Length: 301
Image 1 (cartoon, rainbow, N blue to C red):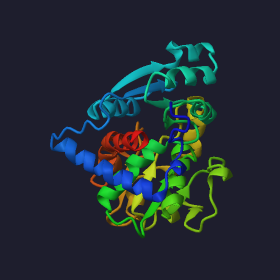
Image 2: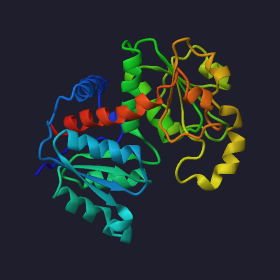
Image 3: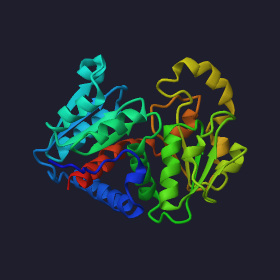
């Protein structure tokens, strides 16, 4: 029994070198998939997927991914399990990890997945918490690298809520030494604990400053899952945070637009941008599959 498994709860669980190697492997796996080349590197392995929050991309990409690697997936909705009836996380982690090879959790509190990982004998992957969304950032980086093979001298812009996506974008930029400009409304900035001391990461006072000469412009919905009761309040606060064709013209001429989806056209982004030639959201969404396959290989091999 593994008493010291590798976990992936935040991007800081990987070094810069490991992240780049993982992305290179993901691109290789994507090519193999396109060429119909089987790659059953995790044959016989079982992935348990625990969901407190609803999902489309996370569930499908992990389930399809482990199957393509030769393994199998188990879907566990917490409301349909003893977790949803109050069983301690300690007990659940001990039991589930004794029966499977790998666990992915998509949950609200980051403390939940931290506690689960502390008591798991197999690797645990963060499929999303209120504080971090590291798997999405692996897909984002893969998309960036496919469009900009040389990562040096790139500028990333984050526009919108200082949420889990923003936190993980900050973390990725810090680990890789990338320039990151963040524009959020007053009162919605990322928490100070997520902001490293770095002259490459800065909070901007206006959207134009943040987006000027940027190579990657990224955003998210204004009201994330769990914030729906604040939707009207947030629509007012974020009204000036929309990514549209006018402000995209301030970015680099080769700039790309990213969004983790689902998107609300006409709110955080216009249809003209998300469905336009600079958008890479479908490439980005597909890359969840390949980046996570590379991640599962890394954790189990």
